[in-house]
Length: 359
Image (tube, rainbow, N blue to C red; front, side):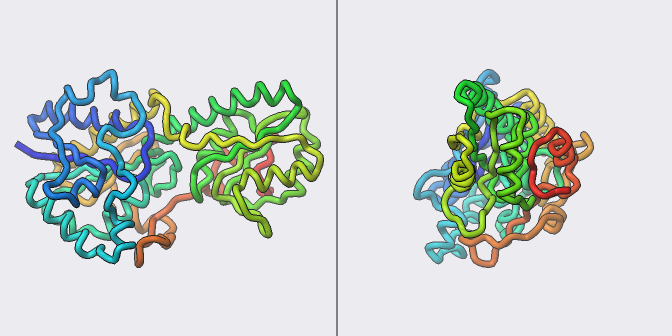
């Protein structure tokens, strides 16, 4: 009988409970034991490790749609790679995690995380030398290379779209524009997808250079005197500081354009998991369980051209753009961004959305 573990790390998102429930279901049918590690790597740094036995009664099927993670993703003061690096105890932290995993005698660990968590798993792969390591990509940012889709992204787009749909009504009532700041870090996929969905007046993302004067002219010449301008949190404006939405708002106000700012914040991480994300969770859970059966290790589930299969963590890490982590010395995170030939950029341009200086 195999003994496997599940751990969710990094930021939370919708779909985590779905993938946990689907893994438990598939593993149970295989006759395997399933354990959950609480609070990510912090749960492995305690004595004894913080783990719970999982069965199909722990997360009932009707609760699998809920956002967040039943296993938690950490807490203020949690010990993880970043806080251990800050304390200068990263070597001891790594040793403790490996000792905990050995003591628990797991055959495999399924790590559900974002590009930072997956990059850390590869950088510190010796920790997992005694078991099979299978990673599942989840993030609302869609910034993980070698996969077209990540768990949580579709639901985040829907949440942001619904938020903007409601703002559009009050925008129309008061003849004003709303500058909405989205999450996404240095990747503009969330803003781009939601912006096309709502028919935004403009979408500003980190990957595409934009001209403020051109933006102002575009809004002044718009067919309506109201609408939504989506601003990804990762953009910058030379000579200005503060929140990106506030910076753009000030420029619009100076040009006489009536506007307000709005910040959906963590509502983008919440919301009942969409059907698309539930199906993706089921496919990636099944792919991960098959990988364990096939004795694979150091792999990530990925979906490309509608096919779900595993890719090596080494290939994942090499495929993205390496960005230095400011909080963990010697660590680079493998990141994906909006490509210059992303078809949605062309769609946005053809639909009259200001997307920056793309043409």
